[in-house]
Image (cartoon, rainbow, N blue to C red):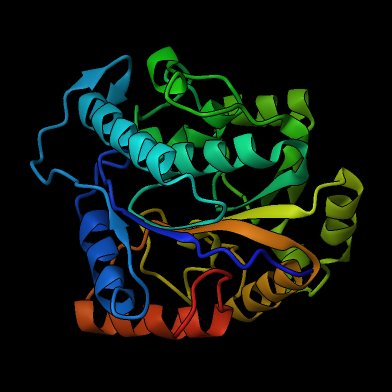
Length: 287
């Protein structure tokens, strides 16, 4: 599938408050140090003060709202056709995904590569951490003031959960009620992406957004994440899947999220660079 020739917006948006893990900010900065000499980034300022007051049943609410507003304003000014987001926690997705959905409408499909569904609401979340809520908000259900900042709302049939394996009970009910498509890590590891590709083609859209939370990967192969969860996608299988998606669809957006260095920062960064070279994310060039 041929891609637009327009340059993507490379977005460095490293909030950590949605997970209450300052280490996610440090991880995003390490990746930025690897990538910023290869491609220019537009940066969103991120406060580092560890004081997270709860409001509307969300920890760090004021910081999350302020950063999301800034991201929305930047995107609205630049009017990008494609976006690569290097981020902290998964809450960053509200601005880029809703913008691209506004631009492409029914032509856009979202692949949510994540160990978790991110489908809680402020009232259903057991933790009050926003990084467990962004996909639900993108689907139109969440805090109304944050939802107002989204450019558009996804439909359930646009979303494909791939590799998710840990759901809270309200999330499982929501997936069943909305009939959201799910594809297991086991199927990806068995090199059986045909069912997923067929479902994507049947959905009818030729534009693709790839959300990549690194915890979708089997933690024995890549442990540097905020929420390691056994039973993930193996790196070789992830690389093959991403290559297939890139081959069959026009990838107009993708993200790289929730890198939390464990042990030596130098070793973790080296592991991340090897991963990125192997997986070869669309829109991320020059590695």
